[in-house]
Structures are given as structure tokens and as C-alpha cells.
Image (cartoon, rainbow, N blue to C red):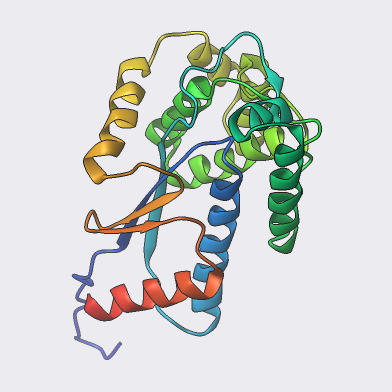
Length: 230
């Protein structure tokens, strides 16, 4: 800067993206990875990408019990008409995930109610910010998809929170309370206001909706197009 010049802050607001997803949704994990890869690639190409993104709650199965987890493959068999079809679906999604460097071990995954996990994610965002929430989202999904852990258990979520940078005693205190119950229920209900009926769904600047785990190149094109409009 030349002496005497005054720096003028940018008036261009960062792109804000709200990602509605569930922590037991395989395409949500794949979509997260592809979206983040697209941002990294754009920046590597020299594109000025100023993006803020957060995760919003959505439950694929709000009626799932919180105290009696079941094998995920049984849940798929019940939903899709038998073990043979469930195996076919799980093998396909496991193969797709591997292409995005994600390891799915669906033979050991256990399905549980995800409301508590969404509360923990909401707390992480509110008290520690988006960066910690993003890491926590990855940790919870790793626990479910890769490590076969019950992400409906307080102790498992506390471990995930600790590995994401939230002190374990703090996480335990929150998880054993009723804090944010009403707020997270309201956020889940709010998904319908955006027209979200399936996940993942990416809401960009509160105006554009991008459904599904788009491939990396498509995410790049979408982000570039919106940057051009801005």
C-alpha cells in the first residue's frame, strides 16, 4: 500500500452455505467431502472463494429408538425390501465413498436415533464456531460409518467432541442436559421452509438450493457461477 492510502474493507460478503444433512446418511458424508474438495480445488486454481458453511439438522428416521441400536444393514433391508437389495445398495455406496477417500464399514455400522448427535453439533456451532462444528461432523460420521460405534450414546459423542477440540467434561455436561432440545427441533422443522425433503441439500445465501451429493466438478461450477453473479 502506498503511504497515505487508506485500506477500504471489502463490501462483498462471504458466500454462506447451510448444509442440511443427517449423520447416518452416506450421501451426506460423500457430499460433504466432494463439496470441500471443490472449494480446495477452486482455491488452488487461484479463485477467490470466501465461503462460510455450517451444518443444519435433518433426521432420516426420527422414530428410531435412542436406547436400542440395530445393525444398519437390517435397517436398509427393512426399508428396501430384503437383505439382498440392502447388500447391493450398501456395496454400491461403499464403493462410491472409497472413490472420495472415505471408508465405509457398513457391516458393523449400528443405526440409532440421531437427535442427540444433532444437539451436539448445534452446541459446537453455538459455543465454538463453524470450524469446530465441521470437524465434529466428520468425527461423528467416522464413528458411525467407519468404526461401527453407536452415535446415539453420550460417551461416544463426548469422545467425538473431545477429538474435535471441545473439552470432554464440557461435552458431557451438555449431553446430559436438556439444552438446545427445543432449538434443534425447531431447526429440523425449518427444513421444510426451505423445501428440503431429502439430504444432503445445500442452501446458498438463503436463495439457491442444491440437492444431492453433486460431483466435485459440478460443485465447482455452481460456486463459480454464484461468485460471478455476486
